[in-house]
Image (cartoon, rainbow, N blue to C red):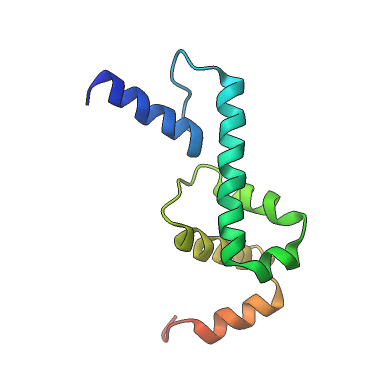
Length: 109
C-alpha cells in the first residue's frame, strides 16, 4: 500500500470507525465530519425503521450512536438489522417491532 493510500484508509477509519487520527489532520474538523456522517447514517437507518425511530423519539440518535461506535457501515440494511437486534438485546425495541421480528424471523432462529 502506498503512503497516500494508507493515509486515506486511516482517515476513513478515523471518520467512520473511531480509528486513530492520522498525523497532520485537524482533530476538531475530523470530529465534526465524523458526527455529521454518523447523523447521516442514523437517518438512513431511521428511514428503514420509521416505526422504531418514531417510538424512540429523541432517544433514537443516542441509542444508534452508542451502537454504531467503532462499527463501520456495511450497508444500511445490515445496519438496520443489527441495530434492531441490539435494541432487542438491551430491551429497548418497541413492542410493535418485537412482534414484527417474531413474524418475519426465519425458522429455527
